[in-house]
Length: 113
Figure 1 (tube, rainbow, N blue to C red):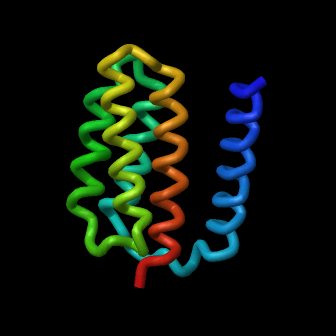
Figure 2: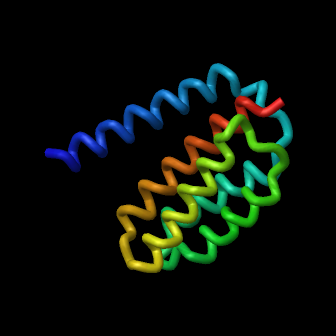
C-alpha cells in the first residue's frame, strides 16, 4: 500500500511540474547544461547500465549557471542518490530518482533569471 501511495504521489508531483512547465515554458530561455542533464537522465532511465548517463547528467548540472532557486542543487542530490542506487543494482529506484531530478530541473529552469 505504501509503495502504491508513493508511486501515485510521484505521478501527481510530475504531472503538476509538467503543467507548470507548459504554463511557464517560454520563461526558461537558453540553458544548455540543464537541457543536456534532462536528456542524460532520460537516457539513464532506459539504459541497461545507467551510470555513464547519470555521470553525464551530474557533470552537466555542476556546470549549469546559478542555483535555479535551489532546484539545481536538489537535482544534483537526486542524481547522486540515483548513482548510489545504480551501483547497488536498484533500477526501479534509479528511474524514480531520475524522474524527480528531471522535475527539479524543469522547475529550476522556470525559476532562473
